[in-house]
Length: 276
Image (tube, rainbow, N blue to C red; front, side, top):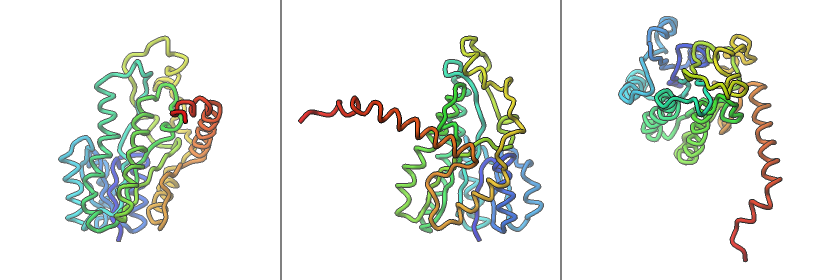
């Protein structure tokens, strides 16, 4: 039986995935900073679910969560790094402490959990690591520079990880969701405290007080959860998987725009080589 460890299960995609994994008949270590918020999942699946308190910024809690998975189920087969939240601010508006906390949660939190599960996966020469990114990494809209940066960092980290662990029988996958009907654009969204008037028409349009999309996003978390199970069970999973029609369009648009710039500036690009 496959054992999953999923971070950030109190709501949104993480909760939908935990529920789907358990209904699928697999084991799941369901984690949240407030473990009471996931206790109902354990109550419904007492034999296959384990609730663990986990703040991914706390190394001791990460170690304890993986240890609990090892003790109860014999190890982690699939790790899903889903814990995180949004942050909106112009780059100039970004505050040091909240930005550092954002990086600690998304980037270093992902690295902590990956490092914690890898010894067991290496010993078994098997395992799957799924790191949840965002189309923000591709689109980098005004007002989301810091959030886009953490997700882009996760994607780069995962690509290097994939190359390192593939010879050991371990898969590393980036999933880039579009807008899903979760709490991300509501309760899970934060912003800088002070707005600069000069950015009102750019970053200001994405600030939380002007958010109008919450509850109307096109993506269905239940279908996303099913897609993640399909990927984890695939014998040949992708490195990179967009989720949602909006994500697919954003990725294609970003690649097309990049290709235009590369073509238009190709002569200057090549002019920097040594002659001869």
